[in-house]
Every structure is written in structure tokens, then in C-alpha cells.
Length: 165
Image (tube, rainbow, N blue to C red; front, side, top):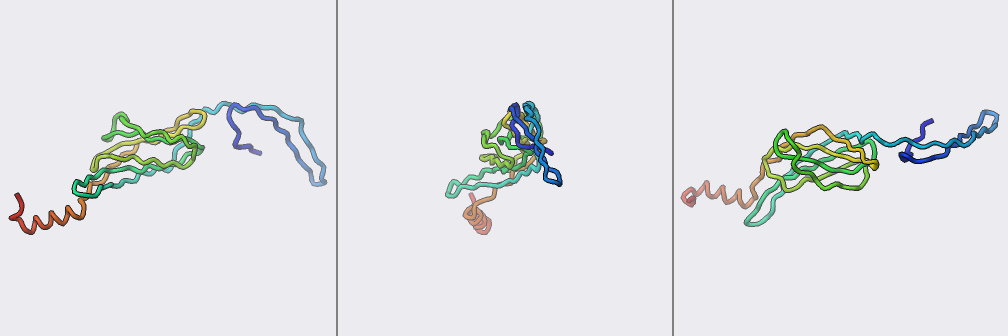
């Protein structure tokens, strides 16, 4: 029999009970034990990275990119993503830690530059402070698209070339 869901470094008392086919019941003496220290980090799996472009409306429309990073862990833990520009090197930035202990994680990284290469790593920390890290993941943010108004103006300028300066 396996007992799960016990807290690390906690004292417990176990009493085993059993019954045979004739209905005779057996009860053990109380067994005292203390669980060991949790020294195993959360295991990260199913890492997914999605990209999108956010465009503000208006005359001075601007675009920025965002990454939506999701993953699972084998035990409840907090969520954070470390990231940096380029394909290698240090993670120069990190998101704020989400302190909710969960096994399904979602982190959004906003205000990134469109059409840039970023590398990132998911980080999860369990209640005992053990940190688990994903593999380094490389992604490219999408190209910024022009607003519909800007596309129409550019098409008109192409048609009526004499309006170009």
C-alpha cells in the first residue's frame, strides 16, 4: 500500500487494519514515523511557447510582441520564466514569480520587440524551495503587421505615386 500526499519533515502515526475472509479484524500497534526532507525539484513537462502581436489603435499605432509560456509540473509549485534576447547567453530578465502553488502553469511575457529571437527557461519552485528548470527554448517573435488604415494609405500612395515625397 502506498500513502501519498504527506508533508515533508512531518511526524505521523500509522495504524494498519485488516480483515480476513471470516471477518476477523487485525489492528497493528501504532507506528510513529517522520517523513524525510523534500529534496527533489519539480519536474517540468509539456512546455509550450505561443507568440502574438499586440497593436495599439490610432494614428500613432505601435506594435509589440508577447510570449505565452505554459507547462506542467509533477507537484504543485510556483511559476516564473527567465528570458533574454538571442539564442544563447544569460537570461537577462525574468517575470515576476506567481506564488500560487499549481501543477499547470501559464506565464505571459509582454512588451517584447517584434521579429526578434529570444531564449527562455521555465522555472518552478515547490513548497520546500526546490527549483526545477526546463531546457532552454528558442523562439522568434512574429513580425509586426500594419494597421488596416496604414495598409490602405500605403496602397493609395503606391497607386498615386505622385503623392510620395
